Image (tube, rainbow, N blue to C red):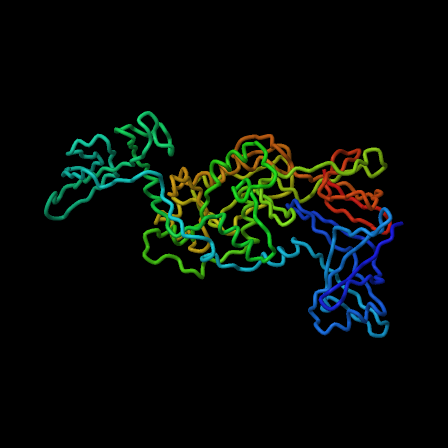
Length: 530
């Protein structure tokens, strides 16, 4: 049995070893769909006599009292990685027995973040300069070579009175004048447009499909605009996504630095894997912008969205990133690591493959047989709607709905859809950069469920196979959904136990769902999933 002691301190209490009564257990628990463990004391602590008087005598009921656990290990007292705090407000006082019982909270950056992330933060200011993003790169020229003619019958045949060759026709406009020119007939009007881009005499511009460009002279090239590009138009008043994310994290006051290879933010931490998810992210998610949805619905309005509707919760944003991109987060030191699930591997922990233990497994009854992914606005076009991810077994259907964002810019822009698209919340846009100019990448299709599922959601599925985008698939990685009963093993004070490591047993390599260290008994109770 190890010797264990508790120290307390505060602004008015010098560090003091107290004679605390508690069970000596610290629990580490992995919440569903998380990759980090939250730690806590298994029981309350009770203080008597002088220790009771020390705390009870504090004038400020809200004074924070720090708690440190030490274990006598290798001939000296060693501080455990867990630490906590309480106030008088967290205590129950017994003045007959001169005792108090305190509910001690964990003192770490998870505690800080989870206390603050539910606050509504206004992102209208503090997130950098506004961003204007266009439907395409290059220079758009329209309304050229306009001509018209009369027709006795309805027709969409364009005219080209000026014999333009380096242009293409805009949509033909047909009217029926009641008087004047073409009265009683159809008036057919045609204008011409094009997109100009800069390349080299032998290489087309480095944006869009190279096969769409036609050489003019010098370094100039042209191509026909797609009608959908014209529909998207120019989106003003955006904010860079990375600026929004970093601002929300800064407002927690926890001192965390956002780091992400996936989104290209302060990426100085351990390198990302070389896989399709990161290749796709590097191509499409480095210059995301956030736009208030009413500004996207009405991009030509002279009255942009007001600041008070630019409110956002960090909790909602992180949840949406997980739903959309299969991106998870954890804290490492003072870094908030936000990466695709394929980034987070486990290292080897304890090996108990020769120990006797329960060799039974039970499947998680909450594993679904269908996952349905939905944007903030349910209505959207086919590419953005996608198909459910389905499995051959499991229980029921789970809807994974995005709280803050929609992404089908063309659908949102279309006036015929305005009645079914809310003004509330935001539009997330994937951009390319042409110098300092932003342009929407491929109609924002990289943020449609079909492409998201195909490139990012083949990992971390509940079962090894199923249906993705309507086709049978073998997935690249699975969740640990097979539960083993708890078992207890020795755990020396110098073992360096880490609940994030995988544990080897006769059943294979298991993920720690819950671990309870008993510091007084030198044991750890483990509940693993496989």
